[in-house]
Amino acid sequence: MFASFGPILALLRGTAFLLAGSGLHGLLLPLRGQAEGFSTASLGLLGTAWAAGFVGGCLFAPRLVRRVGHVRAFGAFAASAAIIALMTGLVIEPTVWIVLRIFTGFAMAGGFMVIESWLNERATNENRGTVFGLYMMVTYASIMGGQIVIAFGDVRSDKLFMVAGIFFCLSLIPTAVSTAVTPKPLQEVSLDLKGLFANSPVSVIACLLVGVANGAWGTLGAVFGAQIGVSTTTIALMMSLTVVAGAAMQMPIGRISDMTDRRNVLAGAAFITAVIGIAIFFIQPRSDVVVLAMTAAYGALAYTLYSIAVAHANDHADAANFVKVSGGLLLLYGFGTMIGPVLGAVLMDQLRPDAIFLATALAHLGLAAYTLVRIKARAPVPIAGRESFQTLPSERAATPEALRLDPRSETPQNR
Image (cartoon, rainbow, N blue to C red; front, side, top):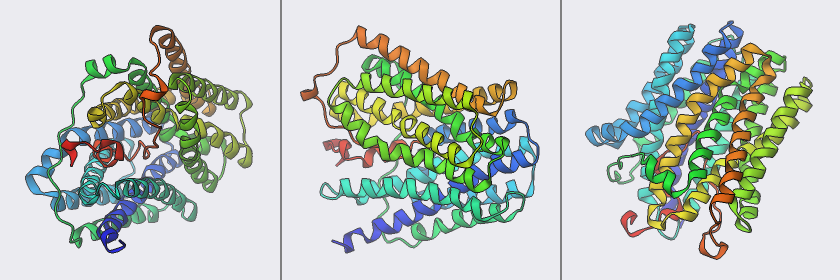
């Protein structure tokens, strides 16, 4: 049994280093930019650029992998990410960073898709659930681990950029020496917006708006922390806790959604998240403990919304269309994350740092209102006619290839 997991564990080690590098670099840039006096707008565009590159990678990286093969393609993606991490430490200029961030997003999407397709090839009917669970654990732990590294360095020095580059290079080793059989070519990703909306209007709007909110917070949360004066260690913990709290709450909230119309849970969770965000805006917490507690409470619900929306969409879809539906919603989420950082930056510039939570609240209130309207317009799927809720890996790291690893994708076409 353990021997069969050997190649999988080697691939997961590569995933861990790739995600750690991404988590560290993604948090380091806004903190260093804030310290260098970059405008909030330019820091927001870093997130928009990364999201644009990531979506582009999901759409076009499969073509590159087909041309040169998985090992060479992954080497190119990881090496590109390492080079860019080092370049951002050498050239401290916002426009250069924004352009480079597009290529980082593309490289991350390509790297994740290669590893996920490799894991999918190695998984069997018997261990697919275990492999998927291990992948989710590695995803969250590695992102958090990379972000925590910030607490042990000086954001004004070049050393953290070097550490990020080292992480990206380390991700090459397990894949380069792996004896795993090269997987099948990556499948093309497409976005059938009309079909997705016909299947579930709520899920389409939800994934777009959740992307807006999570994109704003994921990019500018560190800027918020720096502008209100909390320590770098607190910022690293804050950004990690929001995601980890959401991961921990996915299953409890999901199980509640199994017992009722998922749209009720989606609307309720979105509304409460908006209330928490508005409360943070008005309370203006400045104590480290209060900031951590309130942002963790925010993340505990904000980072469950995407999974509930995907589950609701799949309640309406045929089981054979799981990857197509979930992959399309993931791309919509990506488009939302392009919008969120710009909206958040505008509000933070016009008002104060806490206005980042007004940006997220606008998205969450819009989601809650639209969902309530749709509840009256369409009957729910009977509880007996749908599958139990399943957690999803962090949207910031998942690609459509990760969805093929999900046990729910087990169809004759994927075997």
